[in-house]
Amino acid sequence: MSRLAPFAVLIAVSLSSADVAAEQTPKFPCAAFRPEPNRTLSVLKPMSIKTANGVAQLEAGTSLTPGENLVGIDLYAAYQQFCR
Image (cartoon, rainbow, N blue to C red; front, top):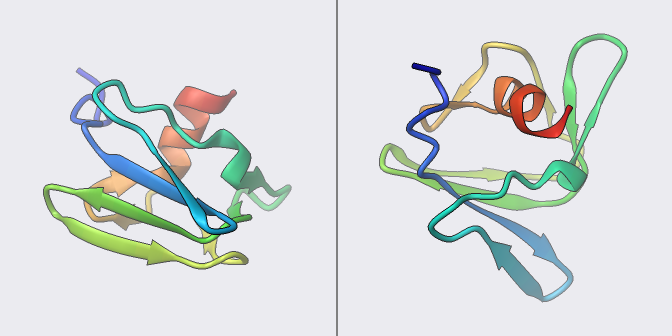
């Protein structure tokens, strides 16, 4: 079973004044991230990540590294799984 199987996570990406949120079947917001040559992931849009473990706020320009755990989710691994 994948570490991302409990991906019952609600990711909201702020787009101007509107929020886009995944419901029952989460859709990973691939366009909100950019992979960098140094194996990091840049956040392009401010967002909230809500899981059973809490809420994390990410600002544009935040850099995420492989294995970095945010509220129980490795966003780098999730990006690799859902966006590549």
